[in-house]
Image (cartoon, rainbow over all chains, first blue to last red):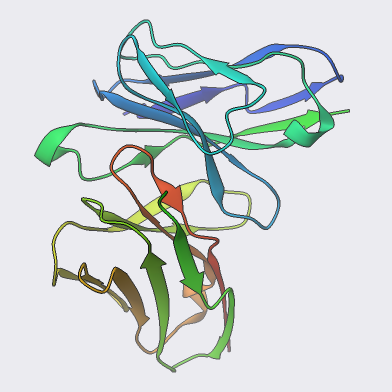
Length: 114
Length: 108
């Protein structure tokens, strides 16, 4: 019962470094998305995907890249980390259509950029 | 562009009391979700509301949806300390936008 798995759980980066946050789901969900949550705030959508090969921008896409080469995986790339990207990142997925009622979230990845 | 607003942002209430959290959204969408988040944790799904007039209940929580008013409510009945958490609503089709959250503290 893995659900949505995010790695790493914690990461410290130096300004200017790049890294990839991994997200995998084993529920065969077409829809996947990435959010960031700053302290005391709500979640803001970074990028989302409605299927393999299809991605689109959310509310705050700048500084992040995504790709969706398989249904299972949706990695989030930070191109050149900045302190403003210090946040908690959540990956989410849901099935499409009438069966896709629930959005499932991963446990989160805590990222600090120094 | 879809906007989702919640109020109140903070809610401190006594155990045993009732209260309602409001979620307004700006454009039509096909569903409305409520989530709970405890400090340092991920989001836990509470309710998915799919149609106008939908009402769902789980324990002391009841959610409803009025698509004409673009309003959803989360009603808390006889609050207990274990309900202390932050509650979020979100709406959209693929581009799910979250409200700012309501931080609920239930006092013994």
